Length: 590
Image 1: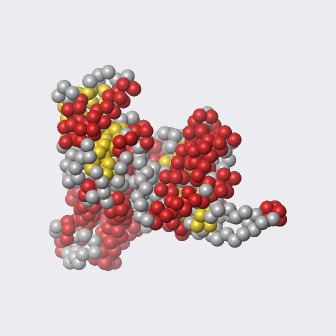
Image 2: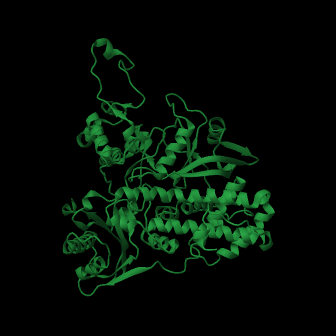
Image 3: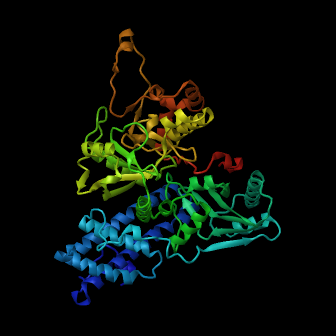
């Protein structure tokens, strides 16, 4: 059956019992995944045209469509299986047969762990599996997506013919777009100069021997990226060349070689890349060589394979628990009113469970919190929103949890967390990368580091606003600091779109009685925001407050926000670049 004819929603003939329910169902699931994968890649292949046409809005729509694709296919496939198998749909004996038949069918397929993850998504949805069911699914701890990778990602190799500039010229000339270059020679010179400058700054005196770049170009929102490495005698460096398409043509916007800068580009706070890969595992192996500290789960995720990234994160966690000697404890920071947050000190992630009831002054509902996390999952995170992965029906040994944490979970999240013998069952939770809460960071950081964090906190508020997001609750405890020193927002229960807010100037008191009142003497609607009051709730010391006001004082004016609302309403594209502004040449504007 051709893959395009087997997509969920098409009219299929019933599964033929004579051909074996196990074989027939296994075949159909493999074909359903093939249809999903074909559609995933079809959307991905639109990225070069969107870049060529400077169609940023179209790129954003494609990003959302591709994110929604997996769940759409799983939902449709489950519905079809229920229809075709009828009463047998929940027959575990039949599913053990289906699983065995499925294993033989996917053997040798590229990235066949993806297909197995799809199979597990179907059975977990059907049976509402708690913990794991090895006889019905493929256990994540046994699915190493890189174990079967024996080949390398397809690369283009450019050998130094005596001058670095000639090598760069060959590389850039090999890029094929309908748009013309704005100034090809200038871009060649810029890349050459940046590589030489980086080598000079790092004390590298050995010549570049060759460049190796992944053949398909990577696309993210409005930029294209050539991703590869610089190789010399005895050294290897990452190399990412950012391309911008302007009204006057394509140019090189930045050259990124520092591992930390490349790591931020491929980070957990960014929108996923659109890059058409025959074998995703090969690309992950290549990127892992460039970014050895980056978890494999995050590399799969940032390449758009969010479900596989989630599976791999669970595998990383289970593998770590096998040797860990510490317990789950409350995460550092102030107690949240909406979430119970806990962590394993030896593992760099945080778990968040929604409380049964929210204390005053929180008025948000559970369903609203869930909706906001779904919104963030699909939105352009602009490098300022953590990618929270949603998990359901997880099982952990009770003795892995500190007594005080168990006490709070049992009393505050009893609707979600249950005891089953010696285990705790989590019906629902979020997992995300752990960061240092900004309020704690400012207490322990050096004055210089604290000032940088305060300024980046203001920039985070701006970056979110440029993507039509108002964080809502700007308290420092709701922001975290990454190992790269970037400030990230991670508390989404008050988050909303900028366009839904009404930013107002604070009315002037009419008399002394008005000034003395504890509550506002004027009408305040639910969506009213008074930026002048922000600074009162930020626990900066005098030096930190002065730094914030010096750089971001306009954020405390209603006019700043109203002007942004106007620009967004007029469909203006406000880009937030995933690389430092100092890496962008002045000539790239326009």
